[in-house]
Length: 246
Length: 246
Image (cartoon, rainbow over all chains, first blue to last red):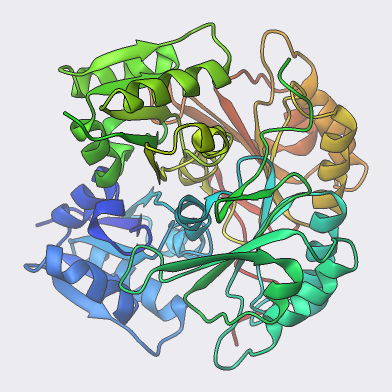
């Protein structure tokens, strides 16, 4: 095989059914599949004849470089990302590194990010304008995260929060709720989805004040409604606008 | 057939390959497919044995009600939305109307919205926090749209703009650029994608001041980078954060 191609593939929330056909075709065409151990394990049962490089501990730069090097040897390689390849995924690093590997073609294949898959479980929280914000301060100063939370809430935009908590970052969701409560009423309709499209999927709809004390982990995605969002039979439903259709 | 089920299905940007397997299965299972004429025409070649209700002129409420009524007669029905079902899609209306049709089960099936598919064409503009804002003022006051544009730009969030222009709303993109230029430098890296995953797909990367005078239409999706976004070989690439990984 002499095709030097790197697919950066969003595999969606984790279930085979939530992959796009384009993502499936890319993985089928690939000789090598590269990714975090947990994402490799999600696709492996459906693509058993592939060679895998799964890297639990390495930095992302090293992983992307390994994928390029393998492609540069003359292989088709898929770098798998959970959700979408371009939302907190590897597409940016791959395109930044591409000038070092100009013989390798790079194709970004989009996928269903947790904002969309989580929203479909909760109902329709993001039917109108929204902001997607990660609470991880590993590469972003907390002051900027707080500024974005305030900006979104003052402009009445619905919010999706990625990475609300992890073992090393406990209390982050409660802190974010405190920042939001500066501008949003405590009764605002909110929701959490855990383990989207995987074993143990569950959702709960609650108020913003309840969200502050809710359990969340690194497999949780958090949604804060805008001022029009209602709890309809335990589904979060945001209005399509602020005027009536007439 | 006596299954009373309404699938609200995000079909992605329009190409069969960009549908998820779950969306394909829902359409295969359905007796009836309901949607805008243009979306019905996109799926019809792949699901030829279905009954279609395509409604070019009706309001969305009427279309959703027709889908419920057909499901309530004992059918499996798919209400198709371009992109995602829950981002400016029909999921919210369907869940709002469901209390009138409690015998009908509603399932929302997410899809790849234009923010993600467009981003994959342009590179990786949305790799970090971002806001999705529609420029349509049909159901939202322009003052609120402007407030959101200012909020996003002041908090250095990347932006995706849906519905930048249409025949009846010309000059909206230029106006939005003027609002953004209050807080963003004219050299900011921006991009437009047209006809994503359809005949005539094209992308262009440009500055914010060039964006102000660019051609856009109802099939265009517009991206504004954050302060870290670079033009790398005509791809928009946003950094994964503001700190180095060390």
